[in-house]
Length: 326
Image 1 (tube, rainbow, N blue to C red):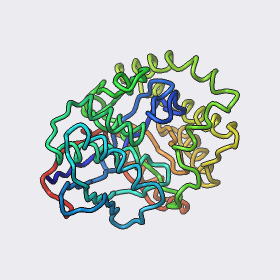
Image 2: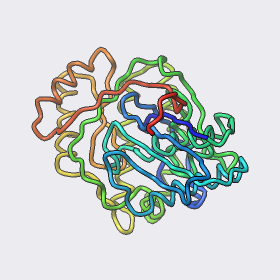
Image 3: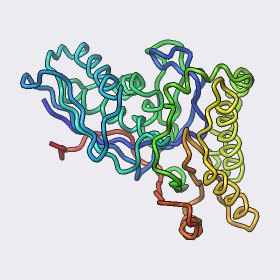
Image 4: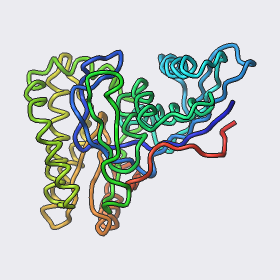
């Protein structure tokens, strides 16, 4: 009873921040994202009578407090659905840093959901896999479908899941992640979601989000890169304004993050069509069209405070593979 899955991380263009129900990770608003081709988690799950308890290994990284509990929570759901009575061994590895705000939990729990359900002998629908992944990490539900995906907020456990709105090859845009630090963030996104409502701007943000979803969908549909980029930047800054005005305030950006944001604006004024977006950490995502990716990459490599670069294109969602990690 062993299976292995690979899942991409994703970057949200319209952000998810704040939950209606923290236990079920029911979000307050719809969000829209893109799966990232070179930011992947591979996870192998095996249920066996030989195991006396659930175990978790993250290759190349320590398992921090609480991670095994979150994994076991998903495994328990799978066991209950599939009538499995065995404990499981879970081994995972990433192609990008974890715990730094690059949505490693999204790829991790999407991969876990697909691998665990298959290892238990269940063939879940894409919707059910998205719901299962959401129980581990809200944004993980968006890594199950392919390409550009929309998380429908819903109001109940069964109505909150993600769907694909455009396939990976619909639009040749590129997400180039500029790593400015590999340090784990001090406050997790899970904890951040719990205090989002303490920002005085949170309710105002929610009122405007349905219109933003419609607009960003229109810009993707028509491939209007300039309007798309402007909205993506605005949305990223709005997300961090909610964080910094929460109680207590969350400040994920570093001086290097700000330097790079300002540099992107300078490059654009000089004629390079590139925009930035941010997740719940210090690293910066640069969005450009494929024809501009080479120029943007060269510019990034000239900056001494950029430690590494990960170039991504839209990609398929979480899926099973035949090669196991153990």
